[in-house]
Length: 324
Image (cartoon, rainbow, N blue to C red):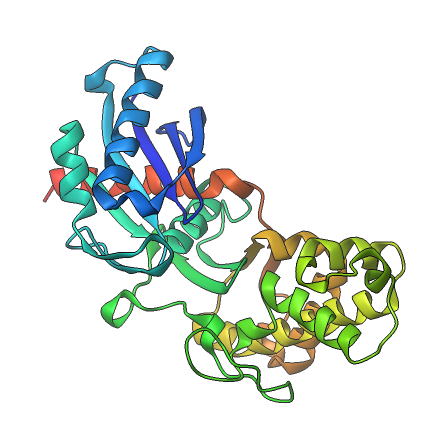
């Protein structure tokens, strides 16, 4: 049995795992990233964590075939460089070369959302489908497309930035990218919380106002809980968010023609409160030929998707390199 190390690097936490070539997680470890210590310290910590996991799992060094890392922000997978990761304060960091130097194993990096989508496509909710569109609703909104086990990159590896598609008929809210009216200002965990907070501040009634005298503490999960408890404002926020996503997917489906759409991330935990209006909006906008030709599914692997995806992707890249 061969194994790969999968690493999901976030601005707050790093999750390292050892993954069988079948996709099964053998061991994992989560710890604080501490990006303030610099990229060298973060990469040194990752290397040490992988070695510790390997030893504790009793896996021989020769059986660890490759290392895959999912990095937030803009990555160059061909050069193995993290071009820009704002939350990590990284710019032009040669991650793959540094990990290879530390562990003596082939190392590959890619954007964390692509690794999440790849994991779900091969081993999660999208397994068995040939054309999988993965969407993550987290702090922001992003997507990736997997076709026959291969990722779609586009020019400069920037395919999938669905969160920065402009949306109509919604407020023109400033986005962190510097523009206004981007989809993720509505469809994201931060967007969901912002919508509820803004409406309460305008005087609309909600049980959330009583629960959160300090509205800055309000999170998307709180909006979901309020919706499930019957709060009308929370329900309307999630309905509106779902419809905005459905409208955006009505563009993505004709462009990519997926046979599966997998939606994950913290914001997707709203379930039917988000999914039902999203499907209704999408259905109302699609050409008849696309209807009933794809399945919309909730992500299955959750926090393990990035680990599994980056590990399986590293194995695939490494084996391809060995045969070329």
